[in-house]
Length: 546
Image 1: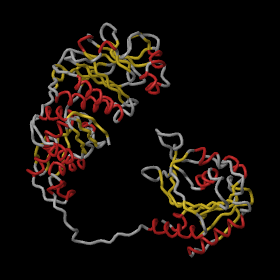
Image 2: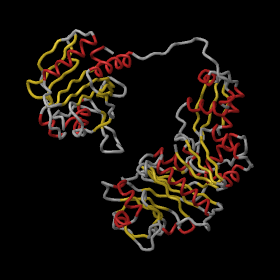
Image 3: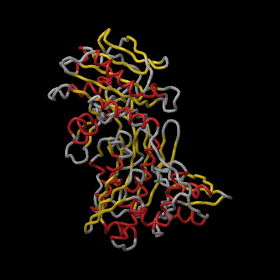
Image 4: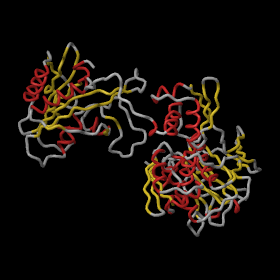
């Protein structure tokens, strides 16, 4: 959820109608938004899909449409302004727009800043993917230039500072430079946005120039959006200009020219999605006639045209969350009103139950607990160091997280024993013997799957005390398999995590389904364990054939 702070009086002014607190809360609830009102202050919790509502203008527009009140139509007007784009490796894409005729007060400035930061945090991925600059255009002159320069090539006064700094100094000394400089790591040249006189408007994605600071005297704005993904850049710009249009701003285009093409920005053309009239009724389970569908779409801000037994739905450019007809049908349900859908008991009763994998997992847990072991629930995420290196095991193929939040959780585990041994190392202060087990999912690479991965259910147990040995491990394994009623064979096995000649493999129907043994002292040393440890692990998918 995205939390947005707004003024109720500002919201009602933009809607153009007086509403009670109850009416505001109920309307927003119907739009998947939770609101809390205390006096004139409102806190709105916006679902991540409706990022266009992360500002008072977007909330006002959505409410006005839902209440069938008029909203300003966004019209893109022509202008003579242009932007020349040179090659910028760090952030190759830029889109711009000019907004004129605004009445800007302190509340408006605060709302703009909030919108900017919410977009940075969501679509922008903390400015790595998209960054927004909002400028007072009256202090600069076009044509404008977007290019890359060396860090020491240009000096300007950053927003909030009183002295000139070059780009390298900004990254080292300015608070925003310190916070976002990782976005430019690995690049020798940095992006810069200049006017015709080489005045600096912006150093994306770090900071704007003080020259174009927006104040209560500002009437006309230049919006620049830069990033590494063109679609995200265009979506972000459309959200901003549609919000400013709610404030009465007139939107003007700019011509953006690079070595290969010239394009007009912003691109505010709606996207058409064709759906069959019967599909909303089929998915929602209610009978909707064409009039119901069209009126529901209008309440959600869509325009539509009937084409035979189908309908062309025109998705507003600020609705970046709409990917398919299913998203539109969800909005039809919202526009129709969930309260108007009468629930019915199914005519055909069905009985639910545990899947085979969960039923077997439950039995396995009961058996392992019968050995006096305590169940552990570890994270599926781990690190290559814990999963392979500390276990003295070669790094096999694994699934890696592209942008991990923490360096403690960077890959999906491929087996269970490392997590359990790691836990033993952190519980040396506890009484012995220690017996723990886990039944959980692991993920391995699978080239035949559409996701190139496969989730498998495994079970593992580890035991540590002064005299833990292979004989005890074999006894636990045999007791486990006999409790399951499985015929098996045991053979000697070599595994780098276990002591040579102190490891065995379990074979069922000619296939290896598990292994057990005494953990190698070198492994115990990496986890700071000073007592012998025995372990066993089974692949339940192979053991039971699911």
